[in-house]
View 1 (cartoon, rainbow, N blue to C red):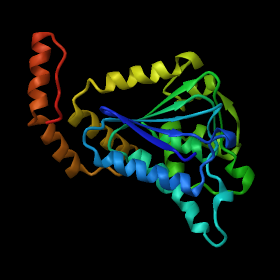
View 2: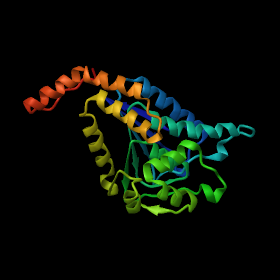
View 3: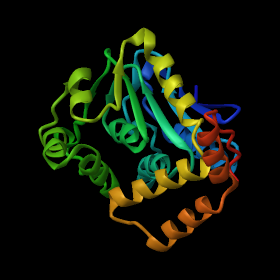
View 4: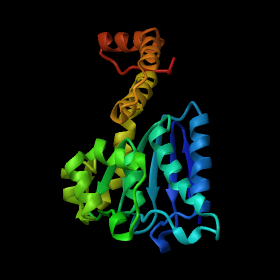
Length: 250
């Protein structure tokens, strides 16, 4: 089955559902994800996007066998989709219940938060396969994990387990398999309490800073929008009155 999209209130969920092939992504799977992300970006009510999988594995990357003969350029779609997760308007949370391999490691790194189970492990075998990783994938490995860790994982192709994934910063948090869904949902619940203009604006600019692509004019514009918002007034009032704020994104 191709990846599905489910929307409930302010939260969208993309589910990879090809467990028989360790959720390896074909060209048609990537096209479905692209359509889902486009739909999410166009829906202003969605503030969080959760990426999850069925089965024992989170994802084993791109299925090169899905390419038609003479259609190798379609393999570039994987990079496009991974970049789309990083550039996605809502906050993104990867829920990693099992092994994450190959390009899927970058797809997870492209998400804002990565909640992992103690059953997970990661492995990037590009150098073993003669694959040269693409630009923004290299940038994400360095900006999220640091140059030394990036070299260790990309050049040495080391397989690492969940505890070390957390220590190295690959995982935002680590929990038991039975608590994985609840931990991710608790994080999203907390995120949804924040002022949308501040939440989404800072997410966007933090990612641009990590890439060395900050647009100071765009940053100034978003800061001004937040400073002149009704939500700022509501946040101040709620703080003074010692009550939870009721933000509207305006």
